[in-house]
Structures are given as C-alpha cells and as structure tokens.
Length: 535
Ligand code: GLC
Ligand code: CA
Image (cartoon, rainbow, N blue to C red; front, side):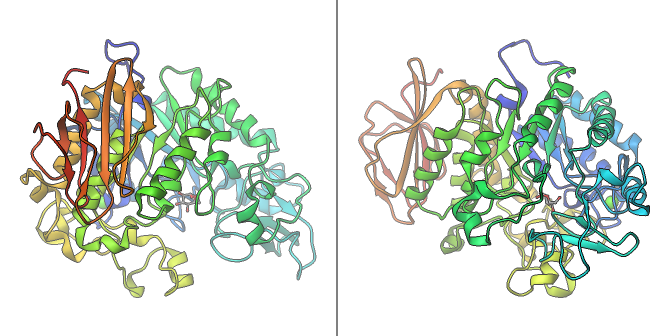
C-alpha cells in the first residue's frame, strides 16, 4: 500500500494500531466464532475510530490448543475463520480504506500436528529430525530444569524414539530449532507468501525465545530469574538478534513493511531487555512490546517511574510503542477504581494517545471492556483449567466485543464461544457512539487530536513539574510547539500549577476549549493543555 503525499509519514510510527482478536470481534456466519468476514464487515467502524492498521490474531490452520498460537500450516487458513479468498477480500477492503494489515507470526514453535513435526518425530534419522529440539535423557530425568509458564515440564518424553523434545509452552507446541538453517528457509518462504499477498507487517510472537542455549544449560531458580533475568538459558540468546535481522532483510525487500516483536519478560516487565531487540540503526525490530505499564500499579508515581525508565532505555534510533492490555493479560488492573471504571478508561486513552511512540488499542479497550468472570465449565483456555481457582487463565480478556444491546451483544446470533459480559447492555458500541461523553468518543477525539498535532509524532516527551504527587504531568515538545498533558490518578480533585496562558484542548471530563485562570483537576480527570491551537 502506498502512503499519502507526505513523505515524512511512516504508517507504523505515526498511525494508531488496533489489536484485533479475531475469535471475539464479529461473527459473520453465526457459528459463535468471530471470523475474517466479520472483520471485513466492520472495517467502517475501525475507519471511523481512526485506526491506521490492524494486527490480526493468528488465523492459520491450527488444532486451536492455544487458540491459533499452535500452527499446523502457516499458509492455510483455519476453516473457522474463513478461506483464503476471504482474507484477500479483507486486505483489499482494508487497503481501500487506508487500513493496513499486520499478521501474527509464530516462529518459536509449531503445532505438533504440523507436517514438519510429524516427520521430525517419526525417526531419529528423518531429515527434519533436527528442525526441533530433541535430546536424549533417561525416562525419569528430563535433559535439564527448563520449565514452561504453561505447566511444569518443558520437556516431553516421546516413546517413539526414546528422546525428549522441548516445548516453551504446551506440549502440543514443540519449539523449532533455529540453529538449523532449513527452519529459517522454510518459515521465510511461508512469510513471503503473505507479504506477496499484500500483508503490511508482522507481529512476532515471543520472538526473544526463538534460540536456546547450545549446551542446554540449567536455568537459575525462578527467583533468580526475576533478579537476574539475563542469565536464563532458554531464551534471549545472542543469536536471536541475528535471526531478527535476517527477517528484517527479507521485509525490507518489500516496500513499507514492518515488524513488531513480543518480548517475553516476567512481571514487572523489563524495558532494558525490550530495548536490546530494537532497531539501533542495525535493522533489528521496528518496534518491541514492553508490558511494564500493564503490570504497573495504578499510581502517578509508579507510572512516572515506568515511563521514565522505559524512555531512557530506548536506543536513539529506536521507536517505542504503548500497550495497555492484550489477549494474555488482565484488561483492568486498577482494582481500587472499579466504581470509576469509565474515568480510568478515559485516562488510559489519554495516556496512550499522547505518549511518545505508536499506540496499540486492544479490541474493546475503546469502550472500556472489563475482565469477564468466566465460570469453570465455560473456560476455554487450558491454563485457566489447570490453575483454577488461583489463576483463571486468559479467557477473561478475550470475550466477545459488545456491539449493541441485542442478544449476545450483537456479536453473533448464536451462543458465542465465550460468554459475553453480563453488563453488555450498559456499555456497548451503539450506546457509546451516541453518548458524547463516552469512552469511545474520547478515543475517537483523541485519535483525531493525535493526528492533527504533529508534535505527537515527532515531539519529544518529558516530565514537567507537577503541583501534586497524584498528577502525572508531561509535555510533548517540538521546536516552539508544546502541549502539556496532566493526568490526575487520584479520585479526589487536585490543584495544578497556574497555566495562565494555556487553554484546555481536551479534557476527559469537561467541555474542551475552556480558558481558565487556575486549574483544578477533578478526581481522575486528565487534560491536554495548549497555548495556541495550531501546531
Ligand atoms: C504469546 C502469545 C500467547 C501464546 C504464547 C505461545 O505469548 O501472545 O497467546 O499463548 O505466545 O505462542
Ligand atoms: Ca463465524
């Protein structure tokens, strides 16, 4: 897809990206499961919201043990999601509206149903044996102490050949051996297939896991991994950057393509590690996800620290991005603020649309969707079933989008694959569209503002002094153009500095464009202040 006239515009830097979990977005054929045609049908909604690209969760052929993150064929479409023609229509219709398509590439592992693994498993001398990580060891003692966040053992004994294979996640997701060059060749060929179809970018699943220690050394204890995350042998090996660069080379043979990588790090996140994988002028990742903000406690102080450290770590040529929720983590962490849910959601919208770097919106975030309590007998995520009731898994942040107040929230005419939030009649897209003070309209307005004021694209970000410790205050500045953003994290009103010459360009809770002598923020209010209107 070609860019607009402005040749300083780079779509993935200056646009807004919508993370779309296909299974729960919109069901076009009423089988209870969201699908590709459902996305196509709703493109106008996304256009109106103002997004520039969508990242689609995996729709490749898959046994769905991990809902598409277990791929059995990278160039076939999983029938529940549609056909290749549906995908081609989606690309065409999206591009027509100026919306780009990012697909989710899972390079670390395949499904155990992938032909490659079926062959690899068949015998020790199969040509694809070395495409996966096989290791000899006796029946009772796995080759080393590596564990998976999806259970205990990361090694599965395969009686067929009396060896273990390694899996970072479920045992149905064997890890590929990226030290074998044929793996790269095969996967790059599949990636080319999508790029040739016009796909604009790749989201790279757990990309820092792809290479493992050659000697398969034991990992330090779990606690030590938190203290010294650099000493883990099952991830973050130096060779992974080499592979990323070679993928970038492939992407750069096409016009205007990008990749954003998921960097797996335990809470509280690790922005230093994330920065390691970012492009420093050396063709590493265009962008990389840092989940530190998702993990952060709701406090201005905490956010101030996380943001400052995060930005300090960004390499000079690197480009950050902002994520506030996703399909693996909780939607709403600010528990003490449940009663003020809508206010917090708007503050988060303000934050993500005014920070430095590309904002990602996880579907439903734009209407303030909440974690949904899914009862045990309706759980779909296997880790939820494994750890119930201590950890209920990821279904809670993957429930169907609320389109309107009709049955099943207008997502489908039939029973959806996961239950819809019982409160959907209280908050949905239809109802929020017509309420000028809704979360949805705050998103629409903020995206519009972000696009109007170039200072958001290129201006630097820095903290400014704040009259209250509860107010997160920062500026975006470029040459003589400046905007000030204030976010009151407290439920109580807080006095700010004077800001005499400024007017309110945007507020999460009052009419915009008011001028004022001194400013008091309402509880959980956020504002953008500006001296002049033209930037
Ligand atoms: C990533 C995905 C997650 C998946 C895992 C294994 O973390 O976001 O959903 O289960 O990788 O592929
Ligand atoms: Ca469907």
